[in-house]
Length: 631
Image (cartoon, rainbow, N blue to C red; front, side, top):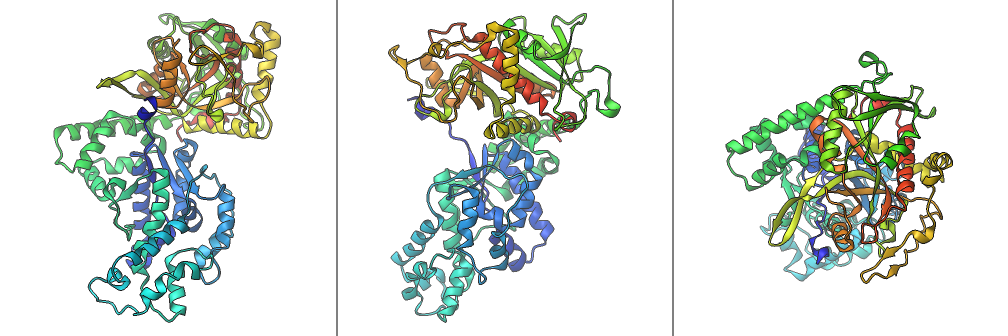
């Protein structure tokens, strides 16, 4: 039953940035490059407001300079994990190599040369899809023969003088291509060599429509409809349209919201999508109703929010931030809940000094974390560390607010400590174990006890904004180093354990996972796991004010939200960040499985692992990155 309640991510397939849409707009309709780019950019950015993920076909990336240009401009979407490249081959390089065999000198020159290049800039992550575009196009092509005469289907009004032998030649086209790409230009060229002239625009709806279907079906993705200059030659089914560009832009103009959205950063768009005000406007625009007072009020709120969050591009007040410099002012706050967590983090700071402030109930420790020389020639990160008076999201939010008032230069808060891990024995790639590290990536933190209950089904509503793209960039660097066999946090962990022996790793025999009937389950084989060491996971973290000791409820939350860990303070930190305009990240060491046998045996080691990873994360955050997190 829990599986039925899993909400699938909203996916938009970016079909309109390909070579063919651009060429039609330029050559057939004589639209200026500037106008085409403006529409393409707006449509891409509006898609962020309607989707959890954007999928760009790999062929568009290689064949279209417009697509590559917009990917470069919106690199922050890549860092946040919102933009993906997809094709049927196992990797992007294999896709490129397969296309080299499908195009030759008789193909459009731009496409023939496109696959001979390798692009070195920051590429979106790659996702392999199932199925084959060529197979789908072939099936659609041959399916035409099942209806009335081919010429009548292509030219119902008998306006054109189509060749009489077209029907007989139709079925032979797929085999006659002999491995060349099944695209309109190749088919027209093939027919011409057979002395049959065929306008390419008659074939576009069949070929391009089938090509797009080969992506939207397997990816369960929707499309952007209603484009003007980049309109598609095929009809879109209503249930496959995420939003209509023409309808939405007209509404946004009426609300004075279009130009503020044009100027917004990618991270601002991501944040905006999470607000109830935008969700209301999106639903209102889809209905096509007249503008009422509530729509105008919501638009006014969003404009104000964009102005407010635009101020987050200001420099953080660190010892290296120029005119904003204030001596000793920390730029980064670290929050812990338990004493074990506080002690672990404190012992990984340098130049430690206690600090108490009148009128602030928090106790603080000021310290430094050196940056790597290879990353930056700047000074150390100045940080402030505090411990909550009690556990829970409310306490975390209150303590963080006090920290920000006392240290106004702080614009990044990292919550460091332990959490309940969410195991998944049937999915080794997602199976979290004791001693592992879980970091909130672009999926952020979900407060699963905040929502509504309808017909006995609880629906969580509180999904907080993701961390800064720059913080995720530092996380990406550590992940890349791990792939190359470098684990700098393990050096910090080993050093901490030598200093505090009670933080050593418990024996592997104590990592016991119980099944439905209380039996001990065998952990699945995991090729990415190294004996006696922690594995690092990135993903959504669940948060509430309730201590979890319920295996069945844990698994229900896992299936519904795709969680990696569950804790009690993260949503308080994230919510305060949304309200006060700072960035956050949650780093958790796994100390238990949130079941009936929960105990404290792994607490200290889990706290040590989280602290060690946090130190390494900040070490790779360069000075220029620390100064402007939303740049």
